[in-house]
Length: 252
Image (cartoon, rainbow, N blue to C red):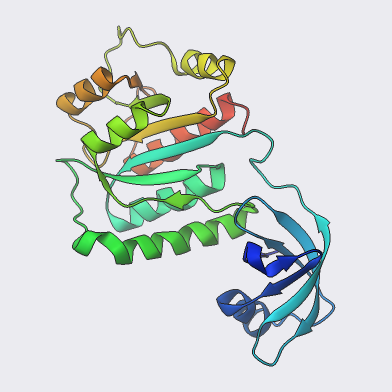
């Protein structure tokens, strides 16, 4: 069953009000009627079953909450921030969609010298499009929250922010086989024992990270890891690594 976003301010007691595009899609596209059961979420962690009580003349929908629904990723409070090198639109948007489905909490587009995509006027129009993609993905997979998307950041600034907040992981396909960095599962187990619930994950753009960027990240406190002998596309690596991290921390 599809679910619909209702603003937390429009939920009072066991009553809710759907407005705008969500109400339009419900009544005009899907042709839902009064008395039909629906599922709604507030984008902040609440997910509910409900029933349509009335459809107003202005198109808004009044409903009644009939129960609370379990939401994926809710059992373990793991906050995963994916710092992903900006890449071509179709690949970046695929990573956003699939990252949202597996449970990424926050996305930060990262600009590096190897970034092939340029953002115009600060990327405001792109940001709005990305928010819509994350909303659609959240609705599709049954999330009760909507991942956050931040404005693009330069690599150096992103690394400083991430390393100052907790465990930071950087995927590097050229990581030496005899690296002194602990295996990924050991890093995550250690963080779990310390009670850390925030993890920052860096995945590079097309072409990956340079040796200079990796050195900078390590100096700031980031830990390197790799995803095996195969060379993965950036968007594939982002989703695979995100799923591995969340699985190891018990969130999948």
